[in-house]
Amino acid sequence: MQKPKIVAIYGSPRRTGNTAALLKKAVEGARGYGAQIEEIVLRDLKISPCLEIYGCTQSGECAIKDDFQKVRDKIMDSQGLMLASPVFFYSVSSHTKILMDRFQSLWVKKNWVQKSTKNQQGIKRKGLLISVGATRGKKLFDGMLLSVRYFFDVLDMELWKALLYRKLDFQDDVLKHPEYLEEAYTTGKAFAQAIEKDFNG
Ligand SMILES: Cc1cc2nc3c(=O)[nH]c(=O)nc-3n(C[C@H](O)[C@H](O)[C@H](O)COP(=O)(O)O)c2cc1C
Image 1 (cartoon, protein in one colour):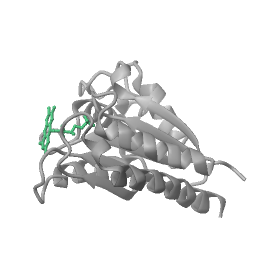
Image 2: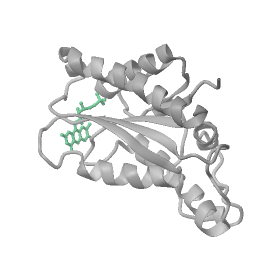
Image 3: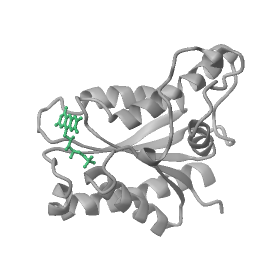
Image 4: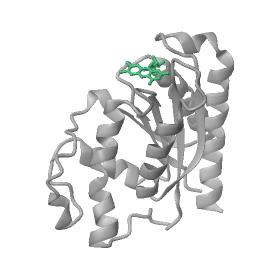
């Protein structure tokens, strides 16, 4: 049986902050289930913002050559994505947004160049969003959820689940909530299981 292939993206500029700790737990849970996980720390990569030159209209390939292609290929080769980003001004972090915008080349490929971006089996990928914010307002995650849903759509991905935690601000705040870390672990495991069920029947 094929192991679920998952990409885990650390989208915070803080290497060991709240979203990183939660994602690490989700990765542990999925690995424990037997998933093959590729971890990507965006702050370690060189990815330019989209320059809106639309070089991608020729073939759907982004004209800017940097670490984006590496990340894109890994996601395209995967069946699931765990995306972790803190709330920054009611949206995703800049690192995450830069990556999302570069996927406009894929949108162009799908909509203008007309090539399928589905994974090899033709099944929708699954996405798990992990986010935290310092405040506790009802609408704290609304902006992020809208952006992420649309981004996942471009990746032929459904938002399988979102783990969203309020009132976490300082670097280690999440450590005061072992129940959040436990939830991330069990969710990571369930995520791998759900992917395996979809892809292996
Ligand atoms: C640039 C910036 C913008 C932020 N914007 C918000 C915000 O709009 N709402 C909020 O509740 N917290 C906001 N925060 C706080 C972070 O979401 C919070 O510190 C979070 O715990 C950081 O997660 P991390 O440790 O994974 O980086 C902001 C922090 C920064 C640095």
